Length: 128
Image (spheres, one colour):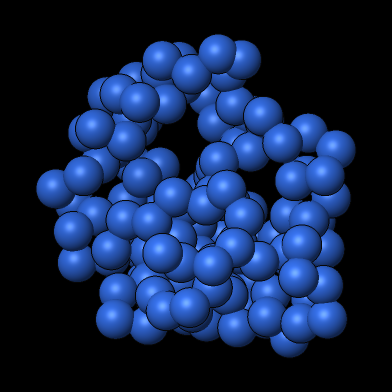
């Protein structure tokens, strides 16, 4: 994961509060995508991620203002989140080197987010 930055939940929360248009959050949980999520996050199941990567890159290129970073997470960020981040980094460099986003991984994933912010309902959205 040499091309990706590991960030803590507090850093992501700060970006969400102070520069929300600069940060894209991708949740790659599969069956464990239940009940709640990080506000504003986009869900792409890890099992579907390879088939969705080109559309994701295309959608990101169209955003204005242009985001500065993309943050990936799963439940614990031991395998799926980091793998998706690395795959995104490689594919985005090939497809659109001028996209120029910092690719980040949420250390501890959604589980650490839940533990850190469990008392703050503003840090969660209900999954429909």
